[in-house]
Length: 244
Image (cartoon, rainbow, N blue to C red; front, side, top):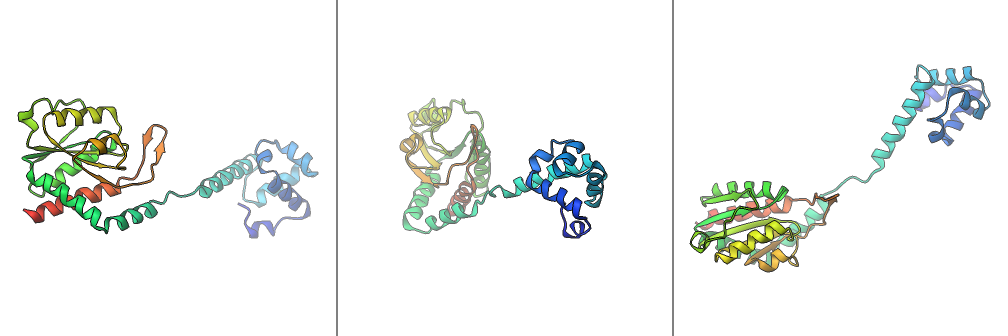
């Protein structure tokens, strides 16, 4: 808005207006043309010429452009969300024997199961559907459970030789934990892919693969990146495909 070429066209009085505006942006946005003229010690006609030289049709448009510029500067000054740092740290952690052992244990559970059920709530539910289909592409009979109240663990004859893969960031969701407890009551195995080994889900599961991402929340909604979950799901499916 205040380009050098336009500023060079201003005379002495108009430059004094510019100086006042730059020092009192927020106040000028709420002023009338007469109020600005009084504060800058110039006439209203000087204000009008000042606005025209800056490319505005009048004082009202000038105030609008001034406000838009302020909002744009505020928006660009906000720190940009950068997921690469935690993802890089996660990938570094996967290059060790502990992580490979967890993958081997999880792969064994999948291969031993007669069927694999994926379960999650919210974003984790969407990833459960993805994981189920991706594993099915590897030749494993797998389904996703979309209803958190589905009584899958009621009968031992139904779930005894199956595996429940549970996806959860917090590992503390009430409905999810109830599903795990029902499933284990039916002698089914549980594989947890969650953000920490210290959650209730992690303590209940037979095998836990944690990914340790910094938690991001928008009010009650969890925006923690799920890139590691996709990585783990795809890696497991490829390991299973190679092992068959």
